Length: 420
Image (tube, rainbow, N blue to C red; front, side):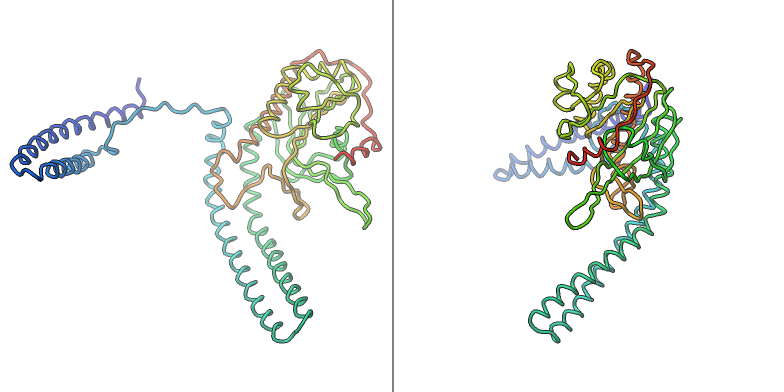
C-alpha cells in the first residue's frame, strides 16, 4: 500500500507529463512555423527561431503554474531517512518542548542585545566626556595615567552591571530549560533516573575514586537512580585544591566535567584505574599490560591486582571505551570495591554566584535551540555510560567476596598535584 507522500508524487508527475506532452506539441509547431518564416525572411532566420523557442518556454512555464505543477519537473520519491535512536528521541521527546522555549529565547536575546547597545553607547559617552575634561585640565604623565584609569573604570562597571542584568533576565529561562529539557534527556536514557538541578556528587564519592586530588567539590545537575540492578548517580562537578605560592595561595582545578558513580553492590579483588596516556600520572599503582595495542596507545592502566584488571577490562569493554574517546572526549575510570567511577572532562568553566557553569546541560541564548547537534553529546554520553554498566554486568568472572579495600590516602592523592 502506497503512502500519502507517494500518492502525491504520482499525481504531480501525472500532471507534469500532461503539460510536457502539450509543450512538446507546441514546440514542434512553433519550430516548424519559425523555420518556414525564416526561409522567407532570410538573414534573420536564427533570430526568429531563437525568439520563438523562448516564447514557447515562457508559455509552458506559465501553463505549469496554471495546472498547479510546482516545480515544473517530475518529482522523485525519496524514502525517509532512517533515524538513529538518539535522533528519534530528539524529534519525539525534545523538539516539541524546544519549540516553545525557542520563542522565549528570542525574546531574551532581543533584551540582551538592547542592554549591550545601551551600555556600549553609555560607555562611549562617558569616555568622551571624561577625556575632554582630562585633556583640558591635565598635562604630562598625569594626563596619561588619568586617561588609562578612567578608560578601565567605565568599561569594568559596564561589564559588571550588564552581567547582573543578564543573569536576572536569563535565570527563569535557564530554570525552565533544565526542568523541561534536561529532565527529558535523562528520562529518555532510563525512566528510573531522577534529576535534581541543585545537587551534586559528594566530596566523599569523588575522593573514593582515587582519580584526582581535591579539597573542595562544587557542582549541579545531579541524577540518581537504578540502571537495572546497579545504583547510579552522577552530576557536573568542579574539583579544586589550594597550593602555596610566593605571593600567598592559589586555587587550582583538578577536574571539571561529568562525574559518575555506579555501585554494583558486589566486591572484586584489587583496584584498577584507567587514565589517558597524556595525563602523565604514575602514582596510581603498577602498570598493567593488556592485549589491545590500540587501547594501550590511548590509555594507561594501573592496578594492584593484575588478574582482576584483565578480567575487568574485557576486550569488548576496552573497545567501547576506546571508540568513545576517539569520537568524543577523554575519559577516566576506576574500579574500586565493587564501584565503578567515571570522569568525563568538560571544557573551560567558571563559577557564577556559587554555581558551576559547564558546557554540559546548559541552555544557549545567542543561537537557536532547535539544533539536534546541541543535544547529541548529552545523549551519547549518557547512553555510553548505560552501555558500560550493561557490559560490566555481563562479565561475571570478576566478582568475588573479599574484605573491601581502603580508599587511597590523602597523602597519596596529594602527590598527584604535580601531575595535574
